[in-house]
Length: 172
Length: 332
Image (cartoon, rainbow over all chains, first blue to last red; front, side, top):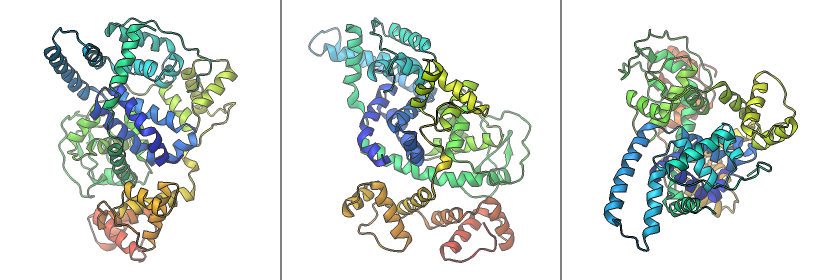
């Protein structure tokens, strides 16, 4: 698979993945741009590794996890502002837009999570990966994944009741 | 299904529309990649340029020469650590790729925010300021120099380095799974670490790597990359390559870049005009200089031969001569 083939078929999914991780359109763009640039410079190596998609997704994850405080502060402030706006706009009225408000509010709360916790939730629920796979991607033990997931869900005030995905056949 | 987790999934799904425009991202990534390739040459020259020309301020040699000129410069650092000035070592031509520099930067515990801070300290500007800072900082760390900013993250642990050794040897996730079966281990992360530690100790693993290392790049790869670079240097863009691929009935856009670049190198015109701006003559000359195998120490020798003091100018002049088919008084 050439880089161009990869970009043509996988870039939209990669961008959605980056948005889920970062919660921020601009940051997602920055992260993916940076990763794609590095990826195309060493594409022959990535191609030889056999799983370009997994490789580049790992690069996106690493880039996101190394993206630190400055944007986080900016982002959290933006979240606060956004919550205020939501409160003003929607008040306490529960109508057909209620679900939209709820998902927006939850999206905002996700932005307050530490990066690793958010990454665990994205990998678990959006990417549908097993805890063992997530542990491999994050370079930690599965128990750490579970711990991060529990903390994140508690912060989001969500109940965890997850079907266990079998460890066997971990290949994505 | 748990309604709370349903809500989480709905939330993710509802925000997929925030995904940025793929074409814009791809176009920008091509620009950054082009600069990265240029910096690989620049960083290759840094072995001498930084140490030979940078002035030591606050325990750090400022790599002005990395992508400006080779003139010495006084640059104040925002965070003078007060360490003893580092003595510049003799110029060398250690080949350091941008990837190596990035790896060294992050392995030392530096983060993106640190790179932003370094970019400010070093007065980097433009869209690639942070990337430049990372590459410069990494190159300096590889030289054992101190940076004017302390890492805000945690340096790579032995486990991180072992995992890196695992991937650098060409192993991947599937190999780790195969190793897990042999070793009766299920923790893929731990398998990678153990395997990496064995590799670091010079041991052989019971599974061959599925991938390959950078060292296996072929001459053809290099020639193709050079041709593709010539294509971009002429101001052609990815969109132009797509158009050419259609015109020439090529399946792959990359092949259009290579063939287009080869034609340009042979002085033949392409059927379409470039959409972008060609690289400046100086940049092309500098590219030609490094592409011919010359480096910083050669530029110093040439400077002596030509009684020039500006090494940047020496490289440009040498590159122009090479482009004109002339021979330089110093072998690469």
